[in-house]
Length: 230
Image (cartoon, rainbow, N blue to C red; front, side, top):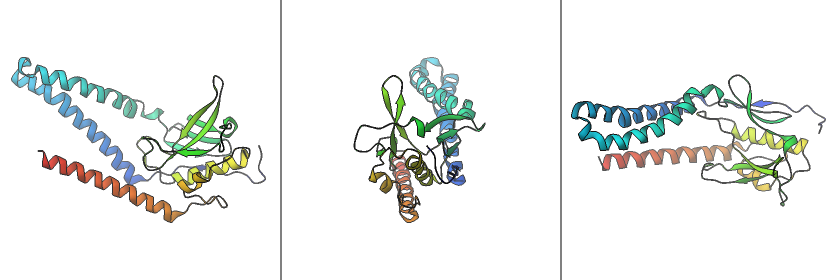
C-alpha cells in the first residue's frame, strides 16, 4: 500500500460557539436534574417529614441517580479519556484524547470486503440523525469481519469540518485500498466530488441550515408545551 505523493494528515476543527453552548446546556440539565430530583425531594423530607414525602422520594431519587451517576462518570470524571480530536492520515482514522492517545481507530489495513456490491456505504440510524453514518467492514478474529459505523463526531464537541474528514478518509481508502468499492451514494451524502475529493460547500451549508432550523423548531415546540401546560 503505497502512494506516489505523500498522503497528508488532517485534524478535526472544533466550532467553538456551538461547542460552548452544547456543553453549557448539558451541565445546566445535569444541575437541573440534581436540583429537582435530588435536592427538592430532600428538602421536602426536611420540611414536611418522611411520611409525606416517601413516595415522591422513592420516585425521584432512583431516576435522579440513574441519570446523574452515568452522566457525571462519562462526561466529567472520565472526560480526559474521551476523544477530543479526530485525525485522518496515511494509517487510517484515529480518535485521540487530550493526551494524544488513540482511544479508537479504523485502519485502512484492517478493512475487508463486505461481500456485497459495495464495500463502503452509508446507513441511517436513530443515533445518526440527518447525517448518515459511514459503514465499513473490519477484520475480526472471531467472525471473520465485523461491521463498523463511523461518525465524525466527538463527545460534547461540534466538529466543523466533518465532511472534509469523511472526504479525506474516503480518499485514503481509495489510495491505500483500491480493492474496496465505495458506493456512489456515499459521495452524494457527504457532498464530495469523487474526482477532486473537494466538498460542495453550498450543499453542506444548506444541510447545516436545515439542522439549525430543526433545532430551533424543536426548542420552540418544547417552550410552547411548557407554557401551555404550566
